[in-house]
Image 1 (cartoon, rainbow, N blue to C red):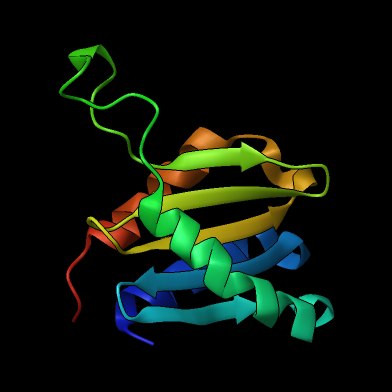
Image 2 (image 1 turned 90 degrees about the vertical axis):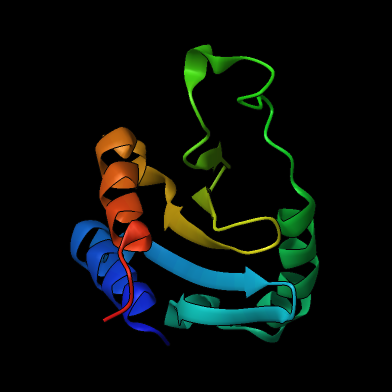
Length: 125
């Protein structure tokens, strides 16, 4: 795991503690788990992640900057589910990172997303 992803995992562990569910990196060649909480590390999860990574590669922002500049570029997408929050950080056309957290951490997401972005924007040491 590269240094940026290690720092991201450490930040999420510090901020979300036991509410950190998982983190995955994907690119055009496949995907890799950066972190999976023990109770979620199941064969079922391994079965569904490739399809989730493919959908993440194909995801198009709801608002593109060239369509409407008033919002600025998309920084991350957040989806709230019954049991979890998913934060998706794009890292180019077909790469990115998805982080899942227990639903209780949906408070103060804007600050949390900004701190994660700072880590992802850094160059590897």
